[in-house]
Structures are given as structure tokens and as C-alpha cells.
Image (tube, rainbow, N blue to C red; front, side):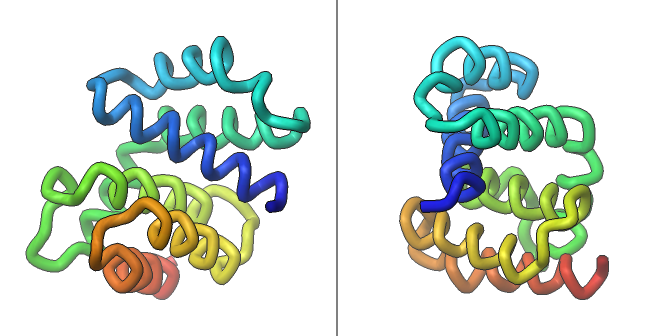
Length: 135
């Protein structure tokens, strides 16, 4: 498993936990730094998790509005929390990093296949496709 894959998984865990507990991303980043950072094998993995969480804290409104614009007859609040967390990470990467769209999509679908709802693969794939086309 690549360093970025491990980092995305750790960011997903922190984001999902924050969503479920009603905590801010600032608190999620603090919790990650105090409990989880030492579990990652390299500094680059921990740094990428921090980048994702800080990036979502700073740009969360734009990320959420981008997701919302791609939803059809759904709202962000209606999404399964797991699917919402996966989409937030992936859309942040699409908008604010140089990571190729096919890598972002592949990594998001890997998380969706492991943790997402029954329809997560097609749903998340469709949303990411729409966001990529609009970008």
C-alpha cells in the first residue's frame, strides 16, 4: 500500500470520526496529531493527512458546494457519512492538488468498495466524473 493510500485512509478515518462526533476539522487535526500520527510509518504519510484535514478545514465550503452542484435530487446532508467523507477527500484532491484525476478516482473507489454504502462505487464514481468534467 502506497504512502498516499495510507494517508487517505487515515484522513478518511479522522474525517468520518469528526463528522460522527460533531467535531470540527480543527479538532480532528488535533486528535490526529495526538493519537494517530505516530501510527503512520513515514513523515510524508502524516504530512499528507494533515494537508487533507487542514485543506478541508480551509476550503470545506468550496468542496461541499462543488459536491452539492454535482448531486442530482440529493443533498449533502442526506449522503451516508462514509460516502460524504470519501467524496470530500477526493474533491479536495481534485480541486487543490496536482494529483491526477484518475488516481484520485481510483483511490476514492478503493475506499468506497471497502467502507461505502451498497451503491457507493457507482454513486461516488459518478459524482467524481461530474466534478472532473466541470474542473
